[in-house]
Length: 112
Length: 114
Image (cartoon, rainbow over all chains, first blue to last red):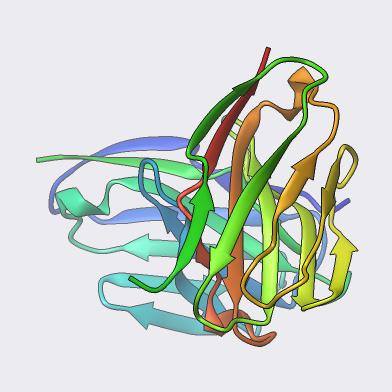
């Protein structure tokens, strides 16, 4: 089956710093999604990407759909304490529109 | 508040027991999903439904059953609980088939099988 590798697994950063995380796939994806999950809650969609090379922003968050269609990146600028959580990438490949594969998550902790 | 409601929030089961995880949404979403999340792992799709009366298997359906008799409700049934089913279960719904519509997730059910 399709595999999604997300890195880093966890990171501690100082408030105000920028953050980068990425996701790579063993196969091509047609759609990339980025979610954030806070403790005790379900994931919440941050950004959806549909085309190779696409760059999309949502406030301080920017995500890119890699040109090879096998990777995606999420950047958070000027981090704040409420950015704490687990960030998941997810992708939809060629297995039908219901088959969305989730990455293992990047746990972000922000030090005030 | 509108959204996806899951009950119970926590449950401990003995091996071989059965239970139903309840999921209700009041947004009139046609698509509904059940995922499980194991520690340090991403979400894995168990079952999904594209509308009342229609269900289909996801990636890890073994040991589970679902039904969708109404648009609002999508219960997940465990017939013979096993330790491998210890996990956090999330129900989600979505309006239409565009990912940009976004899944709305419930807050999860933490299940432990001992």
